[in-house]
Amino acid sequence: MGKKPFNKSQRREKEVKEFDEEVLQIDRVTRVVKGGRRLRFRCTVAIGDRKGRVGIGIGKASEVVNGIKKAVSKAKKSLIKVPITKTDSIPHEIKLKHKASRIFIMPASAGTGVIAGGSLRKILSLAGVKNVLSKTFGTNNKVINAQATLKALKKLRPVKKSMEKVEEKEEKKPVKKGGEEKAEKKEDKKAAKVEAKERKKEEKAEKKARKKEEKAEKKAKKEAEKAKKSDK
Image (cartoon, rainbow, N blue to C red; front, side, top):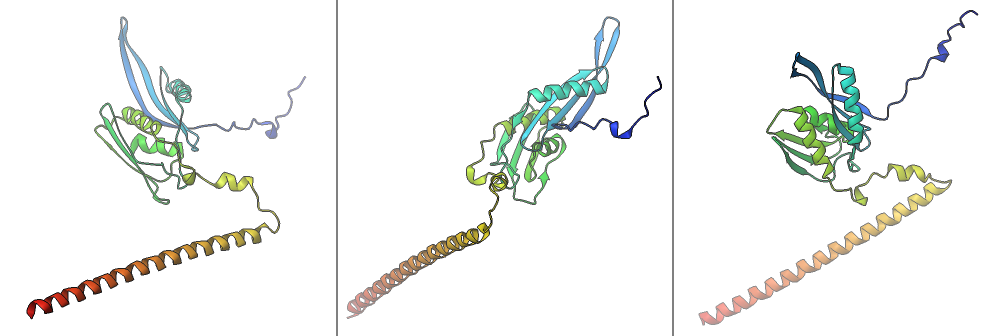
């Protein structure tokens, strides 16, 4: 039987990866044995889905490709969940010391970007953090800095309800026909209530200021009367 003609449409589609991978460092490691030296590669890899999950792993092998595969499989076992706010930042600042590394990470407003360097930048971007300020002290060792970053992100407190992203909720509840008018009316009512509250606050502040002025005038009059009496 003859071979079937190759059809381009039969090509296998590329599998969509669950996690993005970033190689942090590849080192040549030698081990002295009886017959001489054994050369291996140590690969440090960070993985993340850019939606709050991130992890790091270290794999050793005689070839770089196998070392990266081992590191990825270890990283999947050490995944952590990172809380992310509305502004794609972290909920609060954190300082941490791990071995020779000292790390300081601080939340930032929207549009700031990831202000970080080295392995810290790669891990934060893989976690899905888009606006953050950070600084590393003590050492330039990428492996230790990566471990310190993961340790710091693990200690972050969960995000408050007011700071959570609202995109998912809005998608689940689509606006019905005629619902736009109702939404506008609700917004107008809310705005009117806010204005009324502000007016009340301003009126109270004015009353307090008037009372203070009246008291000051009374005191000044009393002091003037006392001064006149003492002169007589």
